[in-house]
Image (cartoon, rainbow, N blue to C red):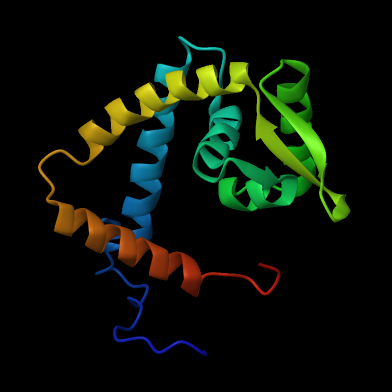
Amino acid sequence: MTAKHDKKAPVRDERFNYRSWPFYWIARASGRYRGRMEEMLRGTTLDMPRWRVLMTLHQDRVASVSEIAAHSSEKLPTMTRIIQRMEADGLVRRRPRPGREHVMEVVLTDAGEVAGNEAWACADSIYGQAFAGMTDAELEQLTGLLQRVAENLKTSGE
C-alpha cells in the first residue's frame, strides 16, 4: 500500500460489528440523503441526476460535460445523455469551449437558474436537518475527513 494507515482494518471474525465500520455509516447517510432529496425533488421538475448537474453549475457557472460527470460520480456517457435531456428541456445549453472546440462546456439557461434555485431550497432544508446540532468546526472536520477518504480511494483514471 502506498498510503500510511494509522489503524488496521478490522479482521473479519465473529467480533466484527458493521456498526463500527465507517463505510456502513457513509452508505447509510448517503442513502438517506438521496431518499430525502428524491422526496423533496418530486415537487419540482428535477431528479437527482439533474440536481447534480445544477449543483455543479451553480458553483462553477460553466463546466465541461466530463467535469460535471466527475463531480456527480456518473459515467461520461450517462452524463452526456442527462445533459442532452436537460438541454432539450431548456435548462442548460452546450457550447464548444473557446480554444478547445472538442470540449463541450455546459452553462445554465435562465430556466435552469430558476430550477436550480428551487432545488437549492430543497437541499438547504435537508442540510439543516442533517447537520443540526453540529458546530462549524465539526462540519469542517467532517468535510475534511471525507475529502481525505475520497482522495485515498481515487483510481488511477481520476
